[in-house]
Image 1 (cartoon, rainbow, N blue to C red):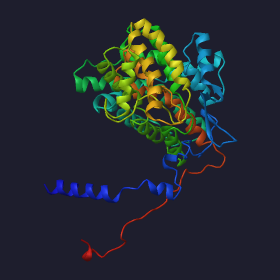
Image 2 (image 1 turned 90 degrees about the horizontal axis):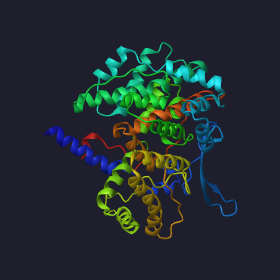
Image 3 (image 1 turned 120 degrees about the vertical axis):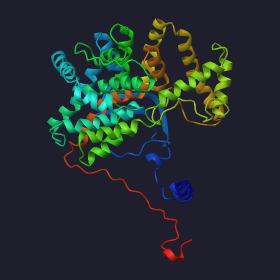
Image 4 (image 1 turned 30 degrees about the vertical axis):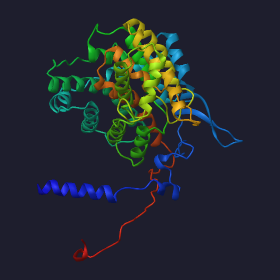
Length: 453
């Protein structure tokens, strides 16, 4: 009882004394969330790896003019990369990993050797699988992934070596093994907490990263070529997103301190685990489930529109007032990832007999923009569907469990994280990242303990 009273007292004091008024950020011109007043990001670093563009600054007005979104890997537009992979009829994720790390596209021989190297490094030791995944089980795969990555430090004789050669070696091993850790963690969790059969399959070195993951999760013969192709596309689209997204900025901050690769990667995983970053597609799926249940006629655009207005008014769904999957911190007119995923999702929907569900998504995407503009009367903000709007639909159609949605994001982003870490440690004049915070004390100062109330 005394402990509960103590916790209540501390909680109340925290609510009273640990809150910062929003007006203080304006008063001291502090960029909350490292965002400028025009919603653009505060420029805090340089990178040659990836870039995200959604607007251009008008030199005459000083305002940000919306433009069709661009995502560039090493200054190559991601749409060109995807179309190139489609033309060659090959899975492209391995090629993208090579590009992000090396700064150039591989030729056929280089890609074959690189893909073979990744395949040869997928296997986990039996003792690691048993002790870290099957015995030390958990209820959240992102948590299991983070601790497994930290545990890999103990198996690396050169864990603290930050030479370029060792960083590349560590990066490739993580990129190869993380999909396996995720698959094994999922099966371990389902067996421990949901009484499902425990299935542990050895990675198949003949398969691409995307197809191998489907094999590890679903088993041989339980997935189609279309499913493997669209998962490969998703991995490409999530591989990097510039240096400013939360998890990539996190790994650059931790890497700047000189810490080891495993600690830095674990910090990025912890950031991605947050629902405001990596869990957005789950929120989209929850919202769409709610719409499916409450909109009787999926073909009636007026009914869909009216329900979206109710969501914005905080009268429906989770009362947050948010239409999940719509809007982005950078993209304005369009998110190129959403466009590419929507194109392939249409093909998958036809194969799976899910055209009705897919059409509902496209209607919600279109009508959500109108609802937003009508509800936010006078706004000049441009919103579009982001990649999360369709990724959940795709993963569901493939038959992947919701528990691996965010881990798939981590599996893909591992490539970008490693590339940014290597870049951060390769500057000629390295400095630890240390932004400044303004102290705004409001307390009464020191009072003798005998006089305190």
